[in-house]
Image (tube, rainbow, N blue to C red; front, side, top):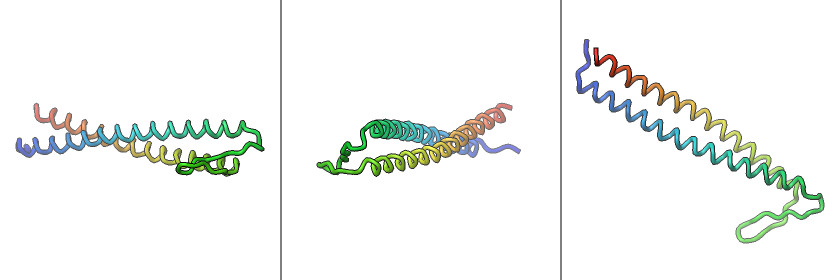
Length: 120
């Protein structure tokens, strides 16, 4: 029992569209991971610099167009929570990346399988 050529062509186009969409999303997710890793490095550097300051040094944070005094320990806590949140985001993005890569790989394998069975 053979599948008609039109149905086979439509099936290949749908699978190809799915593969292209998965590849596009893979690129977006990879860029997001790199961006979040860069943010983590900047926050860690800020935290390191903050720890090197003496305890009596005033710390100011930018708020809109002005700067506001903030205790160093609260800034350190905020940096730590932001780093933890970004690491959590990266973890979920890695899971999404794995799913998308699997989807792309499976789509390509299905297309190859259709072409191999069509040549027989």
